[in-house]
Length: 191
Image 1 (cartoon, rainbow, N blue to C red):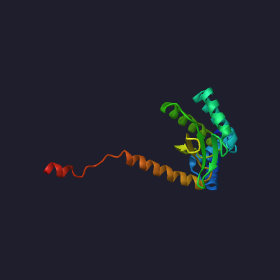
Image 2 (spheres, rainbow, N blue to C red):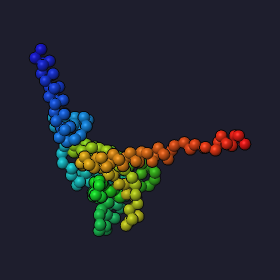
Image 3 (spheres, rainbow, N blue to C red):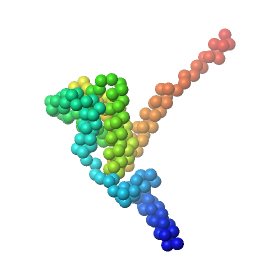
Image 4 (tube, helix red, strand yellow):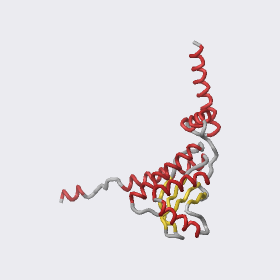
């Protein structure tokens, strides 16, 4: 009987704590639950460290493109004045990571994008941040290199901006693949 009471009290405390976190942090149920679980089970909600994440990304790049190609990237990075091959910045709206990396073919490009974005998402989650990201490839103008740009969020305002950007991107994709309706088809049949 006492075990049931302890279990019920624990469940009640969990829901109360979740509601308090939701109101203080202005987040949803899922994010509040992540915070609670990470508090009790450890390893989560550490502070965001760009150096640590940069090292993890470099290790993954080295494994994907191979050591010889990676060494060429490192040699190139030493010659750059403005920023290296991995750069953390903020454009006034969203924080971002720019990863300049050359790839052999479309398969390697897809592998790089998939593995590096998953690494960033996992790291954001460990830090207690939302793991929604906006990803796109650009051309780095100073060295004519492909650059993977990953935008993420740290605050509620940034999350709202990112959500709007993702919604616009989704609408554009849907519009691009929407069926074209031929309004003149009926007129053509009548002629």
